[in-house]
Length: 136
Image (cartoon, rainbow, N blue to C red; front, top):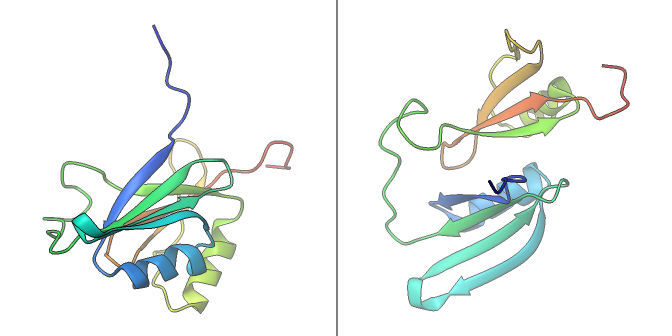
């Protein structure tokens, strides 16, 4: 049987393209791979790179409906980013005026994590995963 290797990308539809682009590139520091305007759809598509090679595709569509309910709705629950230090990220995000939940500990793995929201209220998670060879 063929095997899945990794997640290549996650697609997000935003309400305000400029605001979301600034958030993902400025606040989260993701690099722009490509940015295209699709005139026939009145839609922007921004490809953003994470250090491990995975990507986020950020789309804008006119009059896209809002998510019906919170993270317990069917569909994508949240997007989690692996980080070296959850507390450092929490401090940095809060210094930029972004509300971040209290840091919790995963009861099964013992790893620290927290949640915050993007400009479209999508839940994003920071999950502490030490790099190979670190002391943790």
